[in-house]
Amino acid sequence: MEEIKLGIELDENKVPEGIKWKASGGDDKFNEAKAFLLSIWDKNEGNTMKIDLWTKDMSIDEMKKFFFQTFVTMADTLQRSMDEDGMADALRDFADFFGEKMGVIPKTGKFDN
Image 1 (cartoon, helix red, strand yellow):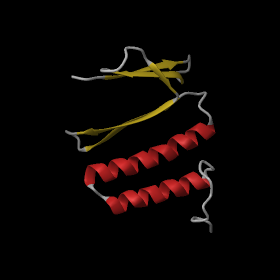
Image 2 (cartoon, rainbow, N blue to C red):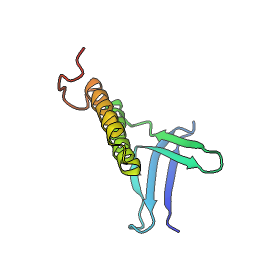
Image 3 (cartoon, rainbow, N blue to C red):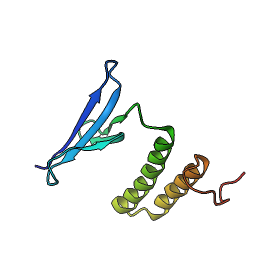
Image 4 (cartoon, rainbow, N blue to C red):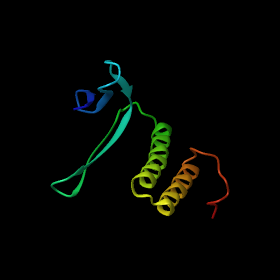
């Protein structure tokens, strides 16, 4: 069985100061991260279990970019997993809208109102 290991360093108030991860099959050292969004489909419950963590030193600009890139990745996963080209494109349009409004990507004029 392959594994993904996460390590969370907490301050005295239990706020994440550091996030580290490693996967079996790669090198044996931990990689540093500032945030992660983990969604797991619970087979028995038929719903999603989630863990969302970010370090206290993650900037607002980094968080905006993290969300933008997550939306784009979700669209790619939607397309690959269900062959839903139209809905994947709609999610990419939303990602572009979000990215423009949050200043992550340049404005195209596509979403001006």
